[in-house]
Amino acid sequence: MQTQTIDIKKGLAGVVVDTTAISKVNPETNSLLYRGYPVQDLAARCSFEEVAWLLWTGELPDAGQLAAFTAQERAARALAPNVKAAIDLLPRNCHPMDVGRTAVSVIGARHPLAEDSSPEANLSKAMDLFAAFPAVVAYDQRRRRGQDLVEPRQDLDYCQNFLWMTFGEEAAPEVVEAFRVSMILYAEHSFNASTFTARVITSTLSDLHSAVTGAIGALKGPLHGGANEAVMHTFHEIGIRPEEPREKAAARAKAWMENALAQKKKVMGFGHRVYKHGDSRVPTMKAALDRMIEHYGRHEILGLYDGLEQAMDEAKGIKPNLDYPAGPTYHLMGFDTGTFTPIFVASRITGWTAHIMEQLEANSLIRPLSAYNGPDQRSL
Ligand SMILES: CC(=O)SCCNC(=O)CCNC(=O)[C@H](O)C(C)(C)COP(=O)(O)OP(=O)(O)OC[C@H]1O[C@@H](n2cnc3c(N)ncnc32)[C@H](O)[C@@H]1OP(=O)(O)O
Ligand SMILES: O=C([O-])CC(=O)C(=O)O
Image 1: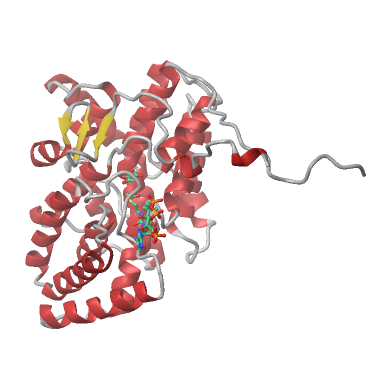
Image 2 (image 1 turned 90 degrees about the horizontal axis):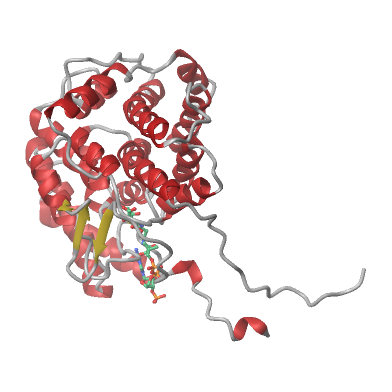
């Protein structure tokens, strides 16, 4: 059989398919750089708007650039009537990622530069989509709860306004801070499955919104972005009991994990294709989760978190990925579980669109080979 002599890289594991100057994931040093800057430093010192600009352009914005971008972003936040109408046509019980995917399609179809893939047009479309997507996420969560649309506020920054549009009230500064950190950590991660999807679509010279729509489809799966939602399903399956002593919650979580692993289940929120000794972003996100646990006084969440993590480590030595602390953080903030992965989309729009622009700078159609293992030629 021919396939036996061909070295097949299943899942493209370990295959380097192109260069990128956008981010460096280094499992040896357990580090992640965006355009050369450690993500932890960006999370400590920058706004999400500044990080978006950095990912797109390669440099942090100066004061004038930031002011112009902030003005453009604030002006493009409102949910367009035809995007709202398209969302309203979708059932309230469909997956929120389906809403996000559909909304990006509609946003693309109505954009005046829809078919223009010049660098200037793509940057402008990336900024518009960055600005417009939070209203989609916020409105979708609200309509499922039977609540009305909340209009954006010009006096709030991106993260404050995202929370405002979702909950209809100003979030506490600690909550905004944890949300900002999560958005920066989720923004970019080299050739992950959804980014690679965006690059594959772009490589055919298709348009930016088509590439992002496809990327959303790839992110939805629980082996990728859908894991933050799946983590919360695990917590609910174990049972969240506010006021339960932390040690008791941890013991129940440990028992759940031992049982799951005995049944050879994959537990979402653990493991990573590239990092094998822990995800570089987890300590920063875990610190944000800890702050939210203190803020909301929900120590039983920490018990569940620690119990699962310890049991997985003891049984298999597999470490949590970013989705593990992000899921319970969003839960504590009041987001519905189905909204978690759309929040990831809102963040990753920055990385995806940066990669779309980079792909077009030196494009080559992405078209690998396959080894045929079907029947030999035969006659009808
Ligand atoms: C932001 C992000 O997208 S981060 C990733 C989010 N995804 C998840 O959390 C989903 C759960 N994790 C996984 O499925 C995997 O760890 C992946 C897909 C992320 C990476 O997988 P791969 O690099 O392909 O490793 P693979 O799935 O082959 O796992 C290697 C071994 O570890 C085990 N393993 C890996 N992750 C897990 C897990 N979460 N739970 C249980 N076992 C696991 C596998 O069963 C396998 O064991 P085996 O060798 O005995 O068969
Ligand atoms: O890199 C990956 O494979 C998945 C991931 O962590 C991400 O996209 O943030």
